[in-house]
Every structure is written in structure tokens, then in C-alpha cells.
Amino acid sequence: MKGLWLENNQLQLRTDIPIPEPPPGEALVRVLRAGICNTDLELIKGYYPYTGIIGHEFVGVVEAGADNLINQRVVGEINAACGYCRFCRRGQPTHCENRTVLGIFNRNGAFAEYLCLPIENLHPVPENVSTDAATFTEPIAAALEIQEQVKLSKDDRVLVVGDGKLGQLIAQTLALTGCELLVVGRHKDKLANLAARGIKTGLVDTVTDIYFDISVDCTGNPEGFSTARRALRPRGTLVLKSTYAGNLSLDASSLVVDEITLIGSRCGPFTPALELLATKQVNVEKLIDAHYALSEGLAAFEKAQTKGVLKVLLEMN
Image (cartoon, rainbow, N blue to C red; front, side, top):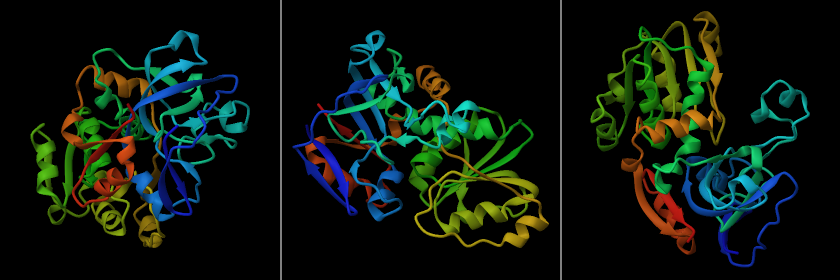
């Protein structure tokens, strides 16, 4: 089968990869569509040493291994857990000590014609959700994880720093809580997507210091972190929602003095993410900038790395 293979920080299109055989408890999924995300781009830069097929945002059709899902469109949670370690026993499989992670750690990913995942990781896609839209399930779930970690009310002042792909989804999901929300970034055209949905937006230099109860950094860069940090009131909460390729310098003393709560946030719940798509409470179509065939995968990555580009989708068929 064809697939985009990463090795020694070099991405190549291979046509000689064997079609995987699902082990017991797993399903074989024929991939229909997959989205390129910032984590994929950071893997190429060396964010984490990985060799294999990358990609983790996908929609596919089950072809074997799960009788109740055969020929159905599915999306899949990316962490494959062991089921018996201390984190699994606590109901925290995303932190399983023995986990593999689709396209990121010890498990071939979605930028190929086929993949395998545990059956329990798969979720049927509602009929009224398009295949393009369903590719956003994983990042929408990641956005919703913030609300799993932080209690939000209509009285909360919330800042989202970053107008990229993830920032756009986080903003849309947080807006549903009714909180006082501001999203800041550096790209007026991207911010316009959110403003059209009634979400207050602004450029980074409009942020008021010591004003917000909660700030979310979606930038993955030191400047974004600094903006999110200075915006917080004492005893505020800072959520880190991006992977940082390098080291991050911070004023730890000010975190102590202001009693700031710092939260890392990663994978989230798929069921409510699919519900938001099915009920059209989030708009993802405007975030799609380009479609490429899998055979054009290298060009797709060049497009995805272009400044200002949002989501690039790969079509496997």
C-alpha cells in the first residue's frame, strides 16, 4: 500500500508498505480522508523521535476485525491503551504507561491507505456529517478537553491566544459556554472566521494585562505563552494546548507569587465532538484550505507549512 513514511526527519512517499493485519481486538480501517496537523509538522522537525507512517486525524471505513462496524465510516481515538496499568485502572487510558499512539508513537498512522486501531477506539460517524468535516473530530475532542479540565461559567473571562487550526476550534467550543471570550492572533483573515460567528476577536497587542480568569495558549511559541501569562489575574488558570518543539523559558517566581494554575491539555472526548459536528454547532468547512491525493502527499506537506494556511486534507481514494 501507499503511505507517507517518516524516518530520520525525512518524509517520503512509499508504495511498498504491507497492508497491516489487525491483531485480536483491533480493526482494519481503510482510510478515506486524513488531516495534516501541527503535531505532524513538528514530528518532521524532530519534536519526537519517530519512524513510521505519520498522521492521526482521519475518517475511514472498517473492513475487518469489528463485525458490528463493517462498512461503516469511523473516526478513532489515537491512544491505544493496555487496559491494565495503573492509569488504565483509574480510567485514564490516554496516559497508559504502555500505550501506542497513532502516527506518533510505536503505531503506524493515518497517512496511508489502511491503518489498525483497537475496536474500542472507534466511533461511528453520523450520517449527516460529511467525511471532510469528520476529519476534525480528533482536534475538536482535544478542544473539548479544556472543559473536562477546567470548570467554566458565564462569568469567566477567557482569552484564547492563537488563530490557527486548533485555536479556531477551541474558540468555537468555548464560545458555547457563554463565557466572556476574546480570541487574539496575528491574522485578520483568520480572526474574521470567528468574528463572523459572533466571537470577539482582536490582534495580540489589544490584550489587557491581569484581566482574564483563564487563558489558553494555542500557539506553541514563547510569545504566545507570554501573552497568555500576562493576561491572567492572580489565581488565574493558564492552559497549554500546543506542543512546544523547543524549550520554554518562563518566570516561575511570578507563577508562585500570583498562584497561577498551569494545566497541560491534550486528547479529549470523541462522543461530544461528533455531537457538535452532527448538530452543526461548530463550523469546520471554512478551515479547509486544500485537498491533495495521497500520491501528492509531499506537496500537501509543503502547502501545510505555508504561512497562513489552515487545514490541508489528504484523500486516500
